[in-house]
Length: 560
Image (cartoon, helix red, strand yellow):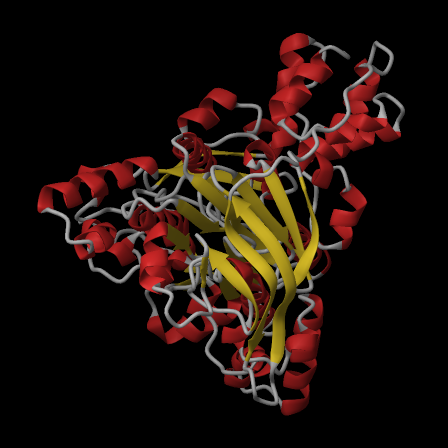
């Protein structure tokens, strides 16, 4: 038996905006499910608007008052058409047809999904599904909106739009917001931050106070937002520099106030290596349809030309619904092109003679939603499934499972006998990744590998993936986290409208800040800082090629 919550005392006031943080498995989602009686406490009581959640007579009142958007949208979508799913809640509230139509139109417009209203939800990307789930809850006009990692699968601009929507509902409509997130930047405008660990509330306060307590945060497996980390790094050099900064504007203002030297001369951006290298995966004018041959036929990707070089970390970025996930699912013949061809280790995946099963042993793919990849009852058995099917000895299977779980930061003895679907979303993601790593593939393809992971978990996973690459393995990462890719990637592809928009080094791609924003993306925070300082004339234009945290700190410390 695992005690998920231990003596939690929490009061949320009407109209408040509260953000709950905590490492994977800290109890955040369990706490959230108590707020609208999805779970009832074993000990103690939860009161919503004066109703005790134990009182089943007021269950409908409680759930009409507190709406919840889950971490995984598939847990919340019930209809076969988008607009019918959004209408599901208002219909069950017994509202008149005209009001239901008005609410559905408003909610879809708010989350910018009106053009998809007649689509089946299962044909949407993960991020698009999340928008539909949010729209369905907004259509019910709840007094309290609980967002459980509801922005985890959205692109940067989409995430910002949802946050702005939440803050607007909070300010203008008086909706109380309780947001659970692993993105520290989402907490900077909260009225209050609550940090959990081991099923208890460990730290509580306003953002400006919480994020300067670096030692306490580190002990709780948390870290400040990147802007605050930059400010604290500057403060180590100049004690007069404020360390409690939360936003980009605050940081730029402080840097301008403490700037003391002329703009330095910086080298040009690193160019992509044009020397011939072995392309182990190659896309040649690839196209793919969904619902092909039906009136709802959609061309998901077209004219895709790209390649993966042995031993590199390749980043793939693009807004939600751009076609990234469809593209990478061609990398191991999980799906095959309708047009063009994909060559994997020289084999054409459209050729019926190609052994797709053998390719999948060499190219491992971890999906965007890891729970789709888990099917065994216990963690150890799920991770061991692949090696067992390779015909390995029991000892070798056990050793592979132990190694794979170590890479993703899951203790073998602690987790091997845990039930897979009792895990948090972040823990599920680690198990899914371990299951692929246990096959020891030559290429590892990761679709949003850090979504749902706490800051320490992200850092540990990325560090271990880097060490894995140093052993000569190849990584392909689809991610909305520009800061992670800035630190890791050798090369990037930008995907938009189902095709390749740009290719280059991180220095070349991230310097195009305005172009990225036009495509629903953002440059890394470091690059945004560099561009702002260049616009102020404090740094030369070449500064926009700097995108790594350590490089920025080294440069800026010499300026203040």
